[in-house]
Image (tube, rainbow, N blue to C red; front, side):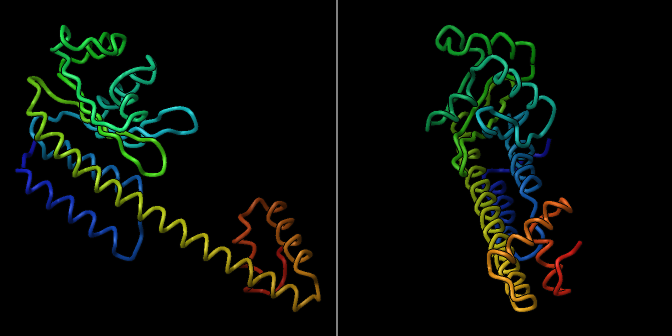
Length: 231
């Protein structure tokens, strides 16, 4: 595992967030995977990292560095308890030292399951607010590394993940506005060409979309290009 000082990790995360402001293709999942990968690869004592996000009412692992994180996350989902679930529903950093069972007896079912992963000595889960409840889950090695150092690195990673979420929302808004303009233009074309009302033109677009099982904006783009509703 390659290790870098905290400044090195911060520089890598800064480079990543700078790329998010550049025009061009953007993939949210790949960007989030890059963030959790940096955290695992460049913070001493971190063995695995994942990002849990709510999908409906159920938690899911959005991205992870490896199968270990997937298994550890699944243990928490299956038992209904653990640091990541607690962090998602609360608003504070959660740290669990698995060697400190006498002083910290929280989540016994999860503890029993995670004991089967000897590489994991602890868990740090940082809540993340990116539009839905989420948590960044950092699985710590044996012995457990300096918690403050890992927490600082996790906080920096959360800032990068927030930047990813902001870019995703901006792209969604841009796409929605572009779709709205295309649909509006297509409606205008049909009204001018056929003398239809606005409602009639929109109904024709919607029915063509449903009949062809295509997105409304794609049908609208065809209308703008040809002047006719595709059949």
